[in-house]
Image (tube, rainbow, N blue to C red; front, top):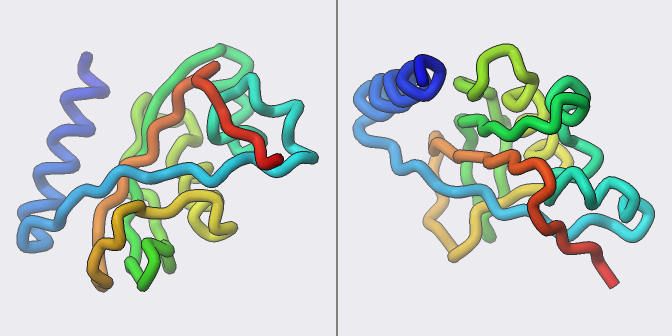
Length: 129
């Protein structure tokens, strides 16, 4: 409960300091065929943090990124994760760098947006055909 409250405070502070940045929800690209064995971890697949995977725990991260055409994320930095010290922030940042997540819906380009990346252990994962 405290971690959720702290994450909410970080989001509010980040949003206030950046003239009400919109928070987008990350969309996961399908897992690649060779990543099929990671599908049990959920849509994050091989990027799911090992500590959270071993504990079968879920969580989320907030990353601040530059948003370019097509919803692609560039120059991302993790600014919050829940639970703390879970490595979800680092995993979200790596997934953005490797173009494994994006923002869907043709959003306008922006220099700084917040993106929420959910990590749901065992959630259904799509694997490319």
